[in-house]
Image 1 (cartoon, rainbow, N blue to C red):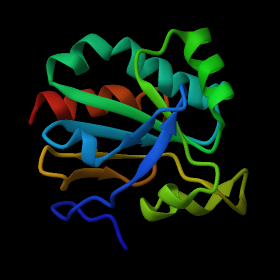
Image 2: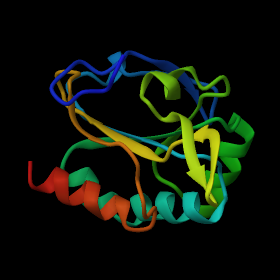
Image 3: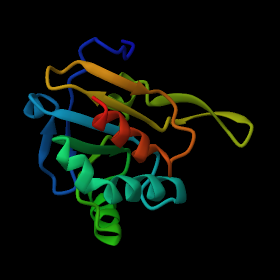
Image 4: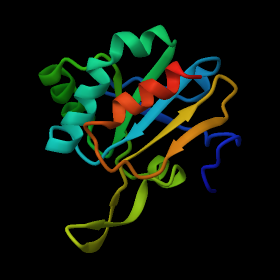
Length: 155
């Protein structure tokens, strides 16, 4: 199933850093920013997470919820959140099923080679559960949170 703007976002339920289940359905009625990233505490992923952290007060003013999803386990997420004081939940998708549904796992270019892996991307889901915007491949992790914030503020 392709992620298309204006179409319903695929349902998911994953566990967060505390082992609690988080489902897209439980967030109905809110704007949800779901960003997919390869690995906790790596340079690009840290810049992106810290960008969302630094924009957090402004993101909250829009009423949006931010969820980061990677294949990392709960312990890794807890350390990452603690180390960088991240104010949002990180969800674990170790079998990459949700990432695959959201076109955030597959073939990508890395250092000039085709590899299978997590594709850094973001999906903005509206209160009605439909996709408002899909950033399919995020080229600059550090700049991306500001672009998401601008989109939320201009909505």
